[in-house]
Amino acid sequence: MAIHEEVLKAAQRICRERGEKVFYVVDVVRALPHLKESSVRTHIVSRCCVNAPINHPHRWPYFRRLARGKYQILPAWRAERKPQARVEESPATYVKSGALHDTIHIAVRRSAGFYIAEGLELALVTQGRSLDELVANLKEAIRLHLEGEDPGVFGLTRSPRIALTYEDYLSEDDKA
Image 1 (cartoon, helix red, strand yellow):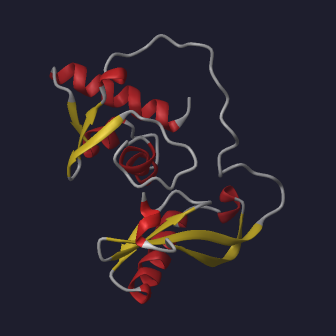
Image 2 (spheres, rainbow, N blue to C red):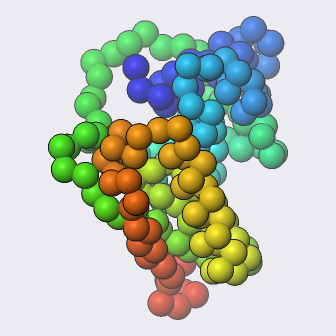
């Protein structure tokens, strides 16, 4: 079962047991001890949240952020559904292809006075008030993400490079 499906089922179970429509990230993390905490958090706050930044290639409209760490399951997903014919997703970024890559690609954008960086190969997001602070936070986030893991599991060499791509609009009118 994909992480996003496990996260949804755990959130549904928590809400059902409490008789509420809201849940907290920490409760889902505790409900899924077999998954990496950072992966669960990333899925809740970014990949499965309709009001999160739109920079993930795959998104599922399961949750809405209400406050820091507090989320609501959207009406269409409140009840557990019977499995239907599954539509296969394109391969995840953690696919072993045999050849190891020496670069971690990062997309950077500016929002509300912060530079925000999101990994394309690794499920991580961080921010900083300046580009220098962002790069320092990014290196720390990558170290923590890879801590205790063989980089080859993520398709990376032992000492990968970081490639930043800065995304911006040509003019304010383009932000529609």
